[in-house]
Amino acid sequence: MPIKNIRKSIKIVIIAAAGLLAVFGGFIVYWEAATPQNTCTSCHEIDGPASMWAESGHRSMHCKECHETAFSGGLHSLVEKGMMVVHHFAGSGERIIMLNEVQLAALLTNCKRCHGVEYARWLSGGHSAPYSAIFLNEKHNTAVQPNSDCLRCHGMFYEGTITDLVSPISIKGPWKILDPEQAAMPVIPCFACHEIHRKGSVAARADYSDPKKIYYSTPARSSAALFYDRYDKAHIETGSLPVLKLWEGERPVDVSEDPIQRICVQCHAPNAFHQAGTSDDRTPRGIHEGLSCQSCHEGHSNDPRQSCMNCHPAVSNCGLDVMKMNTTFADKNSPHNIHSMRCLDCHTKGVPKKRA
Amino acid sequence: MNDGIKLSRKDFLKIAALGAGALSLTTGGLSLFEGCTASRRPGTMFFSEDEIKLTEAIAEQIVPADDWPGGRDAGVANFLDTQLIGSYRRFQQDYQKGLAGLEKSCADKYHRKFEDLAWETQTAILQDMETGRLDGDVWKNGFSEYFFELLRAHCLQGYYGSPRHGGNKNYISYKMIGLDEPQIVGENRSGI
Image 1 (cartoon, each protein chain N blue to C red):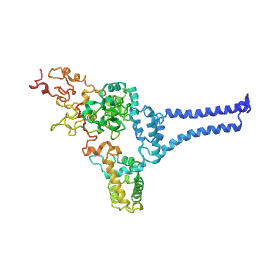
Image 2 (image 1 turned 60 degrees about the horizontal axis):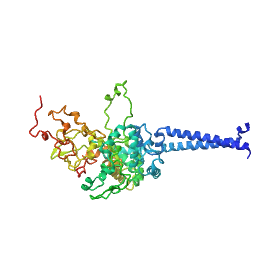
Image 3 (image 1 turned 90 degrees about the horizontal axis):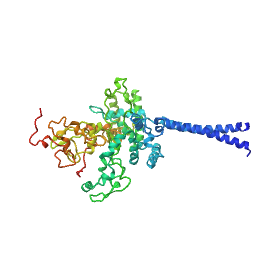
């Protein structure tokens, strides 16, 4: 082939390549920069979740920061998104993109990027316990055989059944977590009480030029926490959760109206008769009756240790140093169990009159 | 030197064709997405916008609001929309036929849509449907009574069933009948 023709061919190829690069480059730039309403939701039939996301506090994050793409999100993501195509043409099936437990666990990295303090507190508290700590607990398992209802509060995102998780299903051990990788995963991740798509505001400084926009002039926001129901595979707003009706014998116990408490009692619940102090009920009674769990427990670590100082001894009339009392519920012999102690537990001969 | 810069008409056409091909691939891809968007009904999976409004009006008739929200606010239409592409796919044709028939009956007799009619008129139409007295070919051979029963049963399922199926928004019917859901029952018998 003459050199002239070779040069011409090279030029054609270069020009064509540049054209292609410009066109596809433009397409990729558009794809990366455009909002999910113009990209993801153009194909994925996810109007509902996408609309929720658009009003959420996480609306500045792109879908793929949590959901990844069909090819980068592992087998689960590929199968799920592939099935969306099948369902589309078959005109069937739900088309909601649900992250599986492994994806949710990986997502905690995203959470702590902005919510580092909350993450650290959660990590230090009981709610970050891994599967191994819960399902291999000898004291529990010898008293109560591991069962499916455990997963309602410990492993709400676990995709299998109890028989897939732990073996043997018996009060006789030793027990083992069948999938070694599962053992270290948290049983109650952030998403047990938080929903990423929930309505909210992005971080912004208060606008002091408009008095109506100053925080104390705006309507109070409802709680940022929700309860994830394993059976419904959905988050339930605190306003839709039932308020605990609790009895001490036949006496109705005054239970706090705090919406967050409705989440707590879903797992820290009394027996089916709703008798105070039964099963895992920790609802305050006695001198602390009516207080919310959050009056004492920090929201993410659940640490209550500094809470006594919030009210005692400044408001205490008796002059006792409550900080030195054994107030823990873990000690069954403690006369000062913070959840149920009464004035007469200390003042056995009668409550003294208020000091002058 | 200048020979290399000059392009024959044939070469120019080649490049132009290549460029046009690339452009059409890209724009074709984009228009495909937009085509999908245009044909879809935002927020719904089976019903059209008109069908949703009609179904909401029917649901409100079947379960009217009183001190508590009725079928419309409880999301019964969303329940039907969800189920008709799921477990109730077998009823898709019945709904398409029945809803279209109802709109036609209303248009023929009242020149208005069902949802725009007065409450009492809507009630009377559904009573006619229940008793097989609606005019029109679509309602013959017992389809009228059948479709009413289907609507009634599905509306009640949407109102009283679990929210996981798309209806009973905010557990409204559970609250109405005093049912705590999710149930508050502890399982800790180990004393930990």
